[in-house]
Image (cartoon, rainbow, N blue to C red; front, side, top):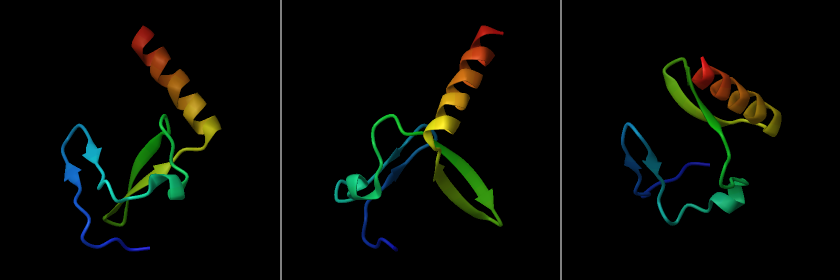
Length: 66
């Protein structure tokens, strides 16, 4: 699905999505994790499944402790 005439605010620290974008319809919830992938010059945000999220949180906690 392509979205036209949406207003997004992009900065190095965050992306603010247009208020008309229905993230509930996409199945996105607070606390979801996404990873950034650059595939052949096309950047994608890919939602991590719950197991990947759990593993990533553990990796980040371990990195902070070192």
